[in-house]
Image 1 (cartoon, helix red, strand yellow):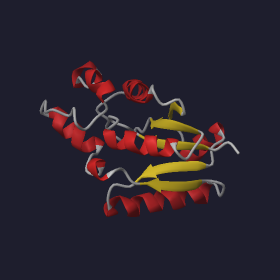
Image 2 (spheres, helix red, strand yellow; image 1 turned 180 degrees about the vertical axis):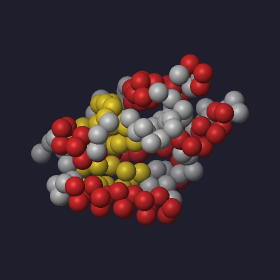
Image 3 (cartoon, helix red, strand yellow; image 1 turned 30 degrees about the vertical axis):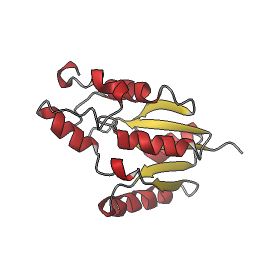
Length: 159
């Protein structure tokens, strides 16, 4: 049986925590679509095109990964891609309540959708895109928080 999963997010920018979840998912699934969200409600630091480019660079050595953007309901995107599994990362207990609600909401929209929650390694548990963006605003060093492949892309002003 061929299993395909979707790992959605804004990935603004992709972090080592995201990459950790992606690598774990590669051990479970035959194909993972990293779905970069075009969410107009979020004020992203990087354009959709740049976020897709950074994710492609960060995952170029992972043959099971396809990177695509979407601007619809996640369950509609999953149907279009013929995927029945959504992968979500959980860093802390505070993530759980929100992710549980989203999982139930997606299930209410499509009963065939299941959500699998993966935790990053402890060393990546504190990393979030918000933390990275905050450090970037003050020209701080984020090289230990993001994949080395995207460091050259993190010039905020070249969006």
